[in-house]
Length: 327
Ligand SMILES: [Zn+2]
Image (tube, rainbow, N blue to C red; front, top):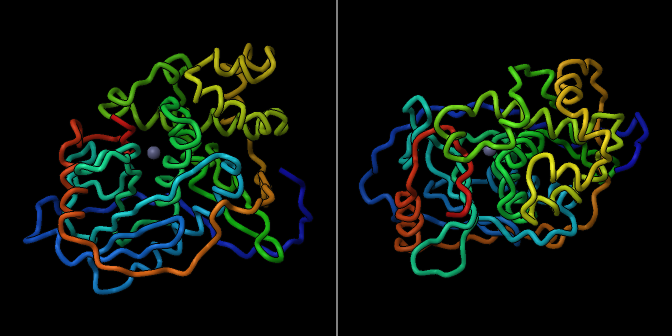
């Protein structure tokens, strides 16, 4: 993380969260036939449309490269698969209100007879860049810090749903351009956040918990004048080693930070009012797999059928959760 001259030219794009739309939940006739795969070294997009999913693969590849070059540089992040369903297409998932859920991410999903688990993003044709980046962030977090707790997944995932690249040749990424204070929402006590299970989150408590988790990650990156930010990678390693909650924080941050975080985090989240042009600049390192040209190939019907059968075999397909961690 470095400081940056104020007058650098913005060149990238800005992500914003957009709420999912509606779609039907019944399977169309022969839903697994006629799919094609658009593939780079980092991203494979499966789509059945006659039109190329140009925007989806461009957004996903760009987001992938930015995340791989910044927060997750040095971690081994595998490529990701994206299944793009039509706006009114079939989805095996329902949101908390019973409407079709068109966007979700599955990490460590076993598909068909393959022993290698898949990491798959399910998106609609109109998925926003912000939502796509958030889902992609879950893939990165699970790869870098396997089985990390829900609060970290949703908090960092929400934080990473808004960023931009800039600089003369796009050599910087800018994070923190959408902040929890600008959105508001009630904060829950940290002990309850740390104890939250995926099942409870899915059933009822997602909205306030998501904002609280986002506030906590925002505090760890921007609170105390940003002095805690460099330790986020150490926190990821601690979480990957099985730590959670206050012990995980205590293994990374100074004692006085952990001692006062219950008061300091909400105070930070509620009282930040200044919005810097680039709150957290991050110089991009070379990604493990640079951008490649896109190749296109037909996908066997059995392959798509296996994907959807794997989705339909998941035990809980209704509720808030957008991330389905390894079973
Ligand atoms: Zn999420």
